[in-house]
Length: 81
Image (cartoon, rainbow, N blue to C red; front, side, top):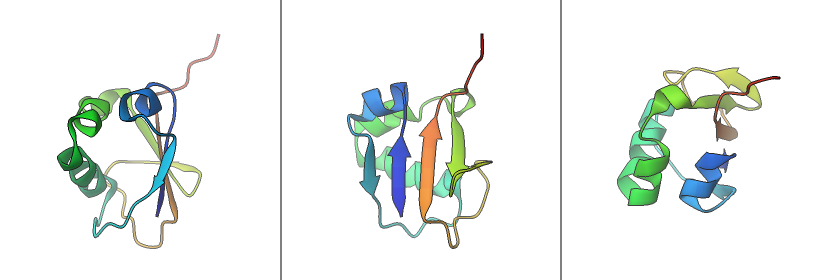
């Protein structure tokens, strides 16, 4: 699947996107796999309350299943002004 990172998530990880082969069943499982890779992923996913996730460009939850998902995007909450 394609994993995209936006804003400060991208800055902490150092790349805007990557192709990830994963056996993760849920978004939380994918995050655990990513955090185990390197400290930069651990830093990016340290506070999930400061993150949102979209699956196939639809806002989702961290306990959502990944079956059939082609794209996962992580980004901070959007604010207006």
